[in-house]
Image 1 (cartoon, rainbow, N blue to C red):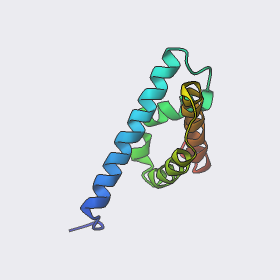
Image 2: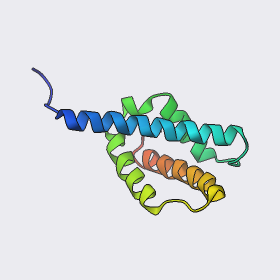
Image 3: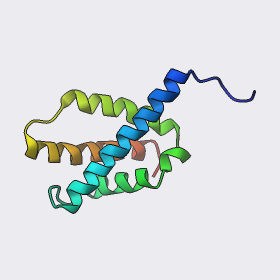
Image 4: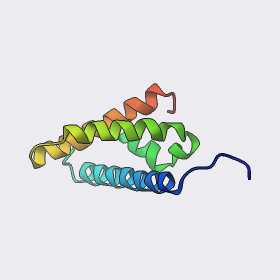
Length: 104
């Protein structure tokens, strides 16, 4: 067997993370298309990067995005209007992560 052994629990957690991020990006895109989120270039760039599957070309980025997501979710959002701004802010923060890693 070539490659490294990865515990099934870690594989499941990674798959769940990709699904959750995909859901977050989908929600962001819906909010943008409905006008709930104003122009957000970095958010749009991250959403495009994610939807193109660029994380597959940069698997190391997933670790950093996972850590950033946990950090951001710990901060949370207030009321519904704040949730839209929070979503855009998260996308901008995710973009900062991948930009800092040189993945864009």
